[in-house]
Image (cartoon, rainbow, N blue to C red; front, side):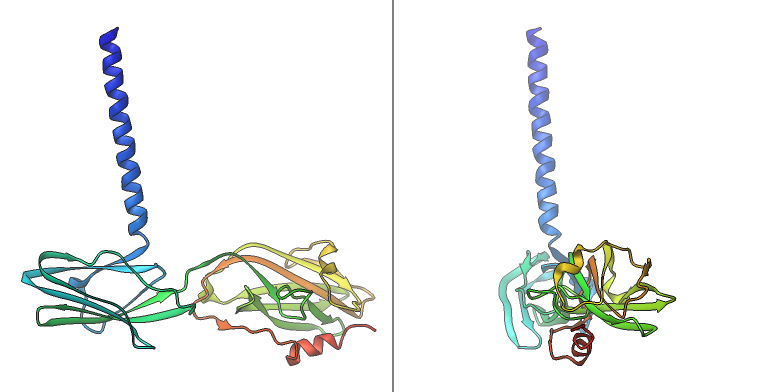
Length: 273
């Protein structure tokens, strides 16, 4: 029995070693995934790369031994982000992870120059804004209060109205169409293909003959996009199209709210007094 306990003890220690080994592997893999791995041997001068990762890591073959220098410049400003002389290297050169600064732009281009001896490889790398997860979007209209949620005022005597859908209070991501036929209102939505939208939810709230724009519209029953909503006898409706979604912002048109915008002003004019 003592002999068995000794074996079990060694087995437990071995299991702990294996467990922590794999934890280490997972941590290293996770850290490496933050940066785009670039094999310079496969690139030609003038190449263009892009990704949504936080930085880059460059490897290259250095044969025969030579001095290596790596420079990264933000293309639009000319600002040098990284400049390192590594000295003489031989075999495989590895820059290590190089994290690039957050610029607040949808896309930031960098010019990368890798000099090995007298040869220089120059290419561009564009850091794309990360995918936005579980954000909100609303059809364009007056604010419901605060600085973000909106609702759209609809003239129900018109057969159809289309307004932009605004995501994250920052981007025009699609459009909402309000169709009226035989006393029924139907809302449909569409989104820019480039945004690769994943929808978590879409809800439609309707308040008839509104006298003001307020968040009270969300106290009404929730409908789904595509539902036929009875608006018989109503002249106007306050419609809140509330969307939860994940998307890629790169390439979308920027949005800045303007209460004096002609579309919003025309909606405000429809409010009953």
